[in-house]
Structures are given as C-alpha cells and as structure tokens.
Length: 191
Image (cartoon, rainbow, N blue to C red):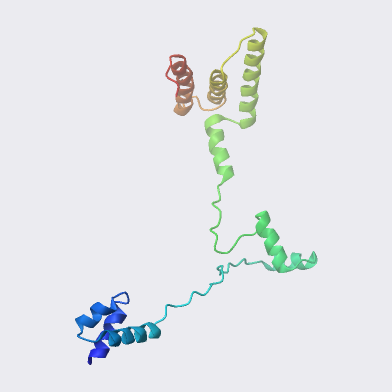
C-alpha cells in the first residue's frame, strides 16, 4: 500500500485527526496531508436525513356475512360500519384477545347455596337496616361514617347467615372484622 493510500485510510478511520500530526506520523508534507484529507471528506458524506412517514400497522376486523348485509341494508359503507362498530364496542380487531367470559349463572348458583335466595336475603337486610335507621332517628343518634357502614355491613353478613348457610365461616369472620375496625379506630388505631 502506498503512502497516500495509508494516509487516506487513516483519515477515514480518524476523521477528526489534525492534519499536521498525520503528516508527521506518515512523514508526508502538510499540503499532501491536507489534499488527502480533502479527498476523504469529499468521498464520504453523512447520510441525509429523510423524514419517515408514520406507518401504522394494518389491523383487521373480520365481519360476518350477516354484518355485511346489515351494513348494505342500512346504506353504510363497510368502512363506516366497522369504524362505528369499533367505537361502540360491538366489533373488535382480530388481533385483540377475546374477552374472558364469566359464567354468571354458575356464580349466582354458588352464592345461592352459601347465602340463600338473593330476593329473600335482600328483604331481610333492608328490613333490618330500615328498623335500625328509624330507631336511631327516633332517638337522635348520630354515628360516624365508619360506624354506620360497619353496622350496615354487619347486618348484611347477619342476614346472609340467617338466610343461607350458618356454617359459612367467612360471614362470621367478616362480622368480627367490621366490629374490630370501629373498635380499633375508637381506641386510636384507625386502619
């Protein structure tokens, strides 16, 4: 490799190098080093920045034949139909996970075994709450929010016990918990 090629190679690897130091390093004249640096600078140009358009990934919505027929019957383009369906939440993108379905009937049947029929329990709970509220009002009793909430929750749990399974431990523990929260707060240990 000849001297001029070595100097060019050095400038390519070290574009900020001082010409006088490069000339001394390769035992070349300063004018030669300036000329070779200029050649290297002219051969390499930083890439020009080009704006990149925003590209959003294409998402699909699959329509059933009946959905396409509905759009046609109401005189709406499929695109408008899809946009409106997505906005209303009745359509979803194909890449969205299916919503987790909960079996409401199964949950309600389990609760009925533990707590009895909801209608009966609700009547008992509301009757006791009305009785307590009327009694407190008649005797000008005032309660703090946490006290009244605890009373209502205890009534709720008591009615579940009376209306449903009296051996459901959670109901008894909950009653103790609500009473303890108020008791602790009254003793300066609010939680």
